[in-house]
Image (tube, rainbow, N blue to C red; front, side, top):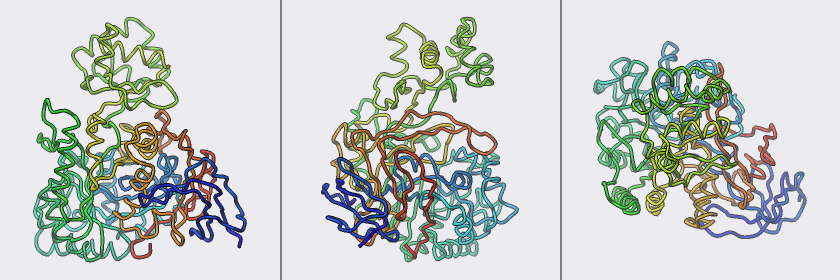
Length: 559
């Protein structure tokens, strides 16, 4: 029997957590048709000797809601083996939305997620009002990656309550309207509902977004619509009491973001204490998570490495002042020329002594090689001391030596890989808080799958091969509710990666200006991905797109 694609002689890692096995994999009509010793030929034959063959990766924390409107390849996640992306996280969605409220929702997405409002308004059709109509609209885009969506609290609350949605309690009839809208959204294809209780996430006028201060009974009423539909409740900024209440009301799956360092109105939510060893901090956080979950179906998601802010001459600068302001107004060639001038450098250093924007003890040079150094334990402050310089002199010197390519990672979250390792020991946690599509000029964490393979498996052995693949495939697919993705099994959707494990990794991030209107964003390419197949069609080969964008909008109830 002939097949569309046959992948020959690979090391198959099925996604369940089981170890690898050698064999072939055949694909026909968008599905996995055979596994093992496959007879018959493929219209396309892929030689996978000395290569891993895995399910496509499932990224359950993205904000690609807007970007897919002008970037159908959905970069950078598609470069890193992601074949399905969950959008609508953190309470932020573009539906439901009345025509007169489009600019407001776009503005909230800009201020919360650092996605330019004008790009959002010009990049999407905005030809919907209700969530099902939104899914129908984005189905027309033709993306390289599958999309599964959630309906967001901010949009639902504003749609029902208008201006009162920012701070007031919902009236009984308003609560019933919200619950009905969420229920209908799931019936129309949403996979769940997301909410945001992180007060610093603000609308353009400075108010915390709708839903931030909603009474927990509002979430419980909505959860009572989501749970019976086997939907997902997703939250950011919610404390453990709120998460328990949501889980108990839904009696379904709950997903939340879990960082070892995150602040809510000045109160730390982490398990850390000054002087406590990093490993103990991680163990304590994992134990608290396991206690929270108990027999509830609650899942946390966390960063795979230090994250928070990326600084460099090509992008965000580490200090303020008149001289730094003049430097910021220049393009990269102009900045490079400016820091060759000794007087300018002296002014910059003098201002940095009083106007530093960051804690340089938590800022780390990412190196100047092909791949970034995310395990460097020598901070910018320590580098400066070792060189007998002020930290600003070190920053500027490294910027000159690398022609402006030098980047520095300010680790607000996951500052210790030792602590993260102990946190990752919890079965209730998945690594991968990549935030792709959001904070685009501030961070670049979308390459998390490559770091999982390169650091957490190949370089440290922390995860076995079977386990690291399960953490990125079948596990997150189950959290979303996908039943036909995340596994190499006959009959499953043919989302597949062919990977050179010896080479796989992230390349250095870089700043580009490819958003509508020339707005900047960080991108980060991958290496070691020989092929990525989406719905049975070759999407990327040899690190390059084929132009065949076979991604689908995955509607709940049909997948």
